[in-house]
Amino acid sequence: MLYTVEEVAQELNITKQAIYRHIRKEEFKDYIVVKDRVKHITEDGLNRLKGKDNKEIIIQKQREEILELKLEKKQLLKLLDQQNEIIKTSQLLEKKAIENTNKALSEVERVLVDKKKELEDRKEQFNNKEKSFWSRFFKFSLA
Image 1: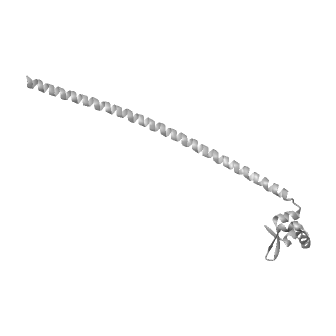
Image 2 (image 1 turned 120 degrees about the vertical axis):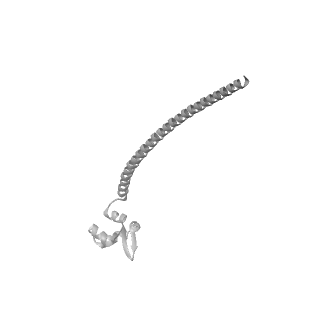
Image 3 (image 1 turned 90 degrees about the vertical axis):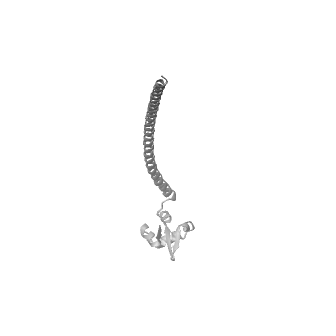
């Protein structure tokens, strides 16, 4: 954010001339921006005029970032736990589906074996009836 010399003077309760004396110094030129022929002071420049050390400001910003990162970490861990639970539930459902499919396949195989045996029995009965019919027929015709 940019501040005019007048705004800085009011905030610091000093005259505009005192502000101009400070901003004319070589080490202060990095904090000055000229817009529409009006000199503006950056927020870092204002903090320097207030006597706040840049290191303190940087440390404070880093502390705030650390707190934000800790909060973000908690949120991400919570999301990971939720995803983990979803995956576990999904795996359990998949396992149950596989078990049910295997049971159904076993039942189908058992039914197929039973039907195959039933068909073989019917075929054998049919063949036996047919043999007995023909054998009786031949017995009568030969006699």
